[in-house]
Image 1 (cartoon, rainbow, N blue to C red):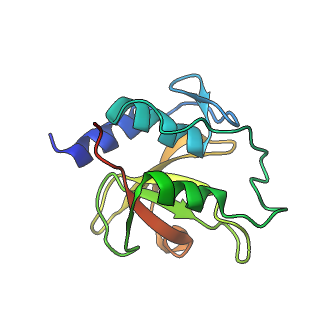
Image 2: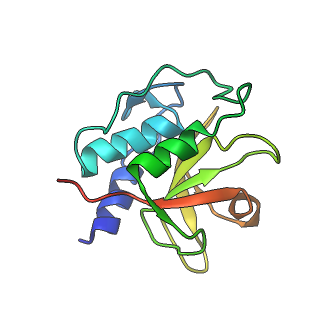
Length: 146
């Protein structure tokens, strides 16, 4: 099994986990960052830093790209069109808003999908159609563990 397969498999094991803001416990609850944190722990090991408490508006009032900055600190930046399974996707949900939604690429090709924790839906695997693709502002690979 490839490393990409391990990441996708780990993400899919979270399917059905309820959406719980700031949580990161498979089967009990997580948000989109909590999903990434959980997959990180399962595939790489200890989380690279403690995540401070955050509100649902996630740095919008300050206009700070905190998720993007964290991605640049801990993940491997890629070109947005350099698609691979297991990539971490960062989305800007509205024009002019900060980027604050994350997902993990699952399938690629003609029917791409991604796994993400979505408010009122929990962890789901969604088609990565045009509506979602146009919201991607950054793509990252997960780093190799020690």
